Amino acid sequence: MNGRPVPFQVETGETDQHVVVQFPVAAGKYLLRVGLLNEFGLSEQSVLPALGSASRGLRILSETWSASRDQLTLEVSGAAGGEYDLGVWNAGLIQNVEGAEFHPGTAKATIGVRIPQSKTEQYPHVKIVVHFSAEQKRGKPGKR
Image 1 (cartoon, helix red, strand yellow):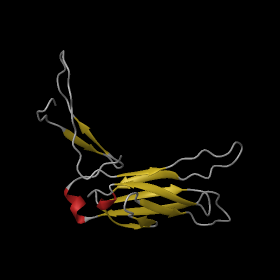
Image 2: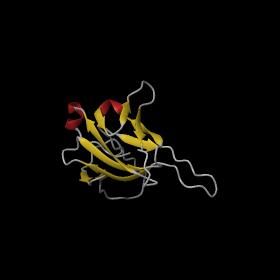
Image 3: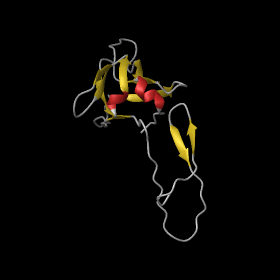
Image 4: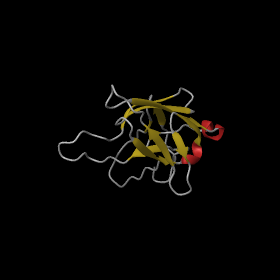
């Protein structure tokens, strides 16, 4: 804070982590900088359905980090037969992906998700497991 180190704690949950910092506040200006190591994020471009139409968007239903923080498991749902791309931030941390296709790309990495066709479910579920490289295990990833 203001160029000096301050004590902090990291609160870890199943889906993300939070930095907790406590300090006294008096008159004046304060600047707190938090540096991140091995930050990782996924994004999905939402599009509203046409008026009166059913949703065709991808939904992230759950996300869970392994206790060792080297694996992220997602459960997603989308329109039967639908194809979606999740944007990846800091793709260099990924070793491989199960249940979807990892496209590292040079400028824009993505994870391609294909929802299976189904005659019984309008929005089938897919499980995706993202495995992180050995270098990543030294730090703790966060959700963006």
